[in-house]
Length: 355
Ligand code: SF4
Image: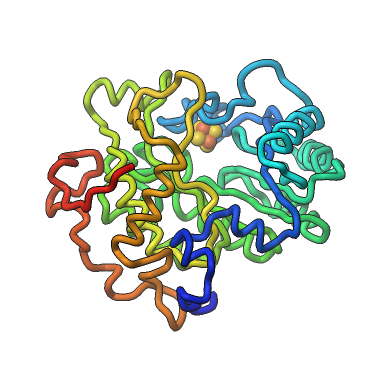
């Protein structure tokens, strides 16, 4: 059972940002500057090769969010060297977390996984590892292997969930359901591995209420991190076809800002936010083409919290797990009957945010 919410005033990061940025989390954990180095280990995905499904998730084209997938393959060691150099020069980074990002990074036999993970951990400046994967791709043996690293390193596993609603998961061809995710969380919580969950806001057919149900369910999991991003349409995806057929829509930046704040008000304030907005590389992006930078969207989210006079975890119970009754009320963020993101955004009852 998680601790009750600590008062807002006692958390400096909440006073400053109104949510718990991963950067602040790393500062709390380490006496030096730590950055994540994204890696492509050459794994594939069971939702593409037929084991869980074919065609992949309808929105997925790894090249659009994971630049390492393109171009020639470099060994883990080489990628880490390049990543270290880049982050040192740009941010003054001192130590690193090796982030196995692309595709499904537990999708291989134990010996192969061990050799990749340990190649990364053998670098003297790597103090941790973060492994992105699907919840249907973690056996107990794999979790036990990853758990052995927790004695010496800072260790995360990142599960793609996207939504708790099986209808949505089927609609985007995720190839797993919510029950499988809960089972993975349950087994991971028996280890010392930190858990981060990925969620997409604005998935096809989802209402605001659906997304808030996902937030409420995640709030009760006792995880340590969350990554959010908006639905975007990238070239060469099934979603792109649906988009051009007029079957799906994307959100404007104001709607996304409001939804993110609604979502984070339901997430306990000790859950660190590792990502607030999606990222596309190259010319893959079709929609939405927001003019705002990631930094301005992030500060817009802080300003929306300030405008509401709320913060991450505002709607969590102060005396134990779960949400306050207010979390289940309609805050009027979206107009009644018009609660599909991306639809009728001009009619939304929104405060105006200058981003
Ligand atoms: S599970 Fe990940 S890599 Fe596989 S198709 Fe879906 S988004 Fe792409």
